Length: 165
Image (cartoon, rainbow, N blue to C red; front, side, top):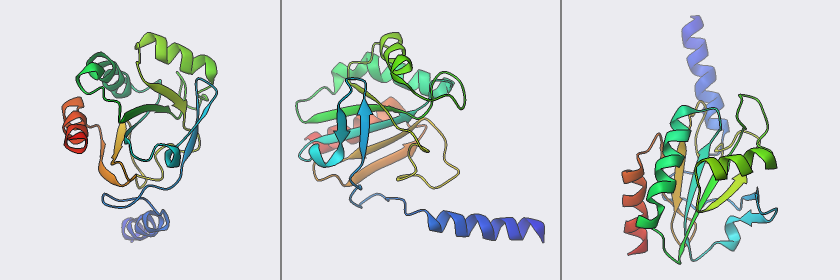
């Protein structure tokens, strides 16, 4: 009885979250970049956008951002924006402040934008419980074309190349 009640409550909770699915237009979201500028999706129309959700304490996130940074030149394109979005800093529950973002960018030599994504990063794209690292790829009309938790860099690049060609 207890297990079935939990299952029903989980299903109800998941349906309350209006997550954006593949094929749907992304909401107008904004983040604070390390450059202290605001990055908003509605200002990135006509660009392919890759949103990389992570935290500083997540080993999988560290591996993904490291490889993505090292291989970025393979997909660099004038109509591509990649944004590393950190929900938390180096420790679980710690805010991703400017100091953390600077160290994150330097440590992994991130060649693209770095920004904070507070308040349950990724909640617009992934139903709870979701895990990190998570990636969302938007086409030039801000429509979700790829989203996956723990995607390989090869999978991300394949999705990006298909949209840039």
